Image 1 (cartoon, rainbow, N blue to C red):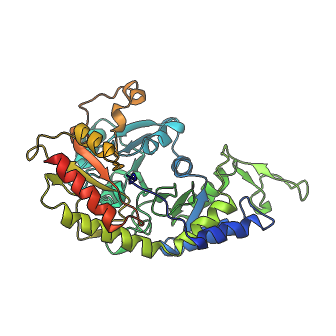
Image 2: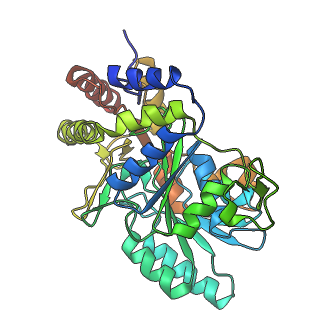
Image 3: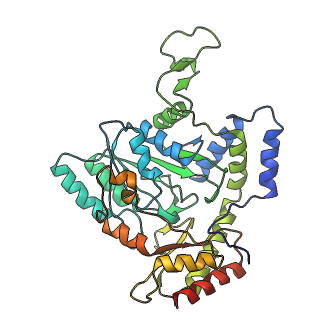
Amino acid sequence: MDTIPYSRQEISEDDIAAVTAVLRSELITQGPVVQRFEQAFAAAHEVAHAVAVSNATSALHLACLALGVGPRSRVWTTPISFVASANCALYCGAAVDFVDIDPITRNLSVDALRDKLEDAEAQDELPDVLIPVDFAGLPADLREMRALADRYGFKILEDASHATGASYLGAPVACAWADATVFSFHAVKILTCAEGGMVATHDAALAQRVRSLRSHGITRDEGEFESASHGAWYYEQQALGLNARMTELQAALGLSQLGRLADMQARREALADRYDTLLARLPLILPPRLPDRRSAWHLYAVEIDPARTPVNRAAAFAALREAGIGVNVHYIPIHTQPFYRRLGFAPGDFPAAERYYARTLSLPLFPALTSAQQDRVVNVLGSVLA
């Protein structure tokens, strides 16, 4: 019996042709295709600037640097995310802390954030940057977070790695509320470049800092030189950057995929709707549906309801995998990882995140998933939970 993965990239003949065209061209590293991808992505997300980089981890790191995060900075994020959402601040030498999740949305809790900010203000330990994560593709409560940011004086770096194509309050993510927004184009994300990331912002100066930092902090623009040019070969390193450039190959694939983003999004929504119907009677807590935002449906994460079944997550996971259903778990709370425990965090610090983790499963969801495959997932899951 074939295994059904929890996710899988979808590569079309047009995608292959786009990448092949670059391979036959004279330039395969960063060039005009990257620029076209950036412009098209910015237009689709109604944001002024989009800067393509090698992956979303680099995007988070460079965005933190561009926002001024350094050794004396404090950065807060959610414990329910991939470790990169916190690691990016540590790369800059900053201190990291977490804000517990909302048990309904699974996103960073505004109520918990408000309480933590009040305590931090009293101790003169307010954050410099907040990194909310649009978990599973559902946008965070950015309007409320923006109001708190304006009140307490911190920046917002939205991690929309799951949320390409999502919308919030009737507009695409990245077009408002956050100072900068990061997207991921990993193989199993909404839109893929195999690997890749994007930093989107309305701030022209911030975008320029990211452009410089993605290429060693070097500029070849004579208008930006701090010294007189020595000649046409001259360049200046003006900051300590990284090599985080996107290639023309990655950009060609991303640009091609962007052209059918709406179709892929519609298919994910249809599958999520069908899951909602098929799973309604099982002892599960299903993903939230909120009227003011549209999820990108990167993940379809359910929670096993312990009040309605004695089957725990570990047993369900093992049984589903044994049956060829490639379920996964998103995520192990970051603060419980050994590295973060050595920084002083401990189990019990963020109980809502830990409670969610203890019972969550991500079910297969990707555009090429068939109705028959989805039926099989639901039938096996129903048998396991019974």
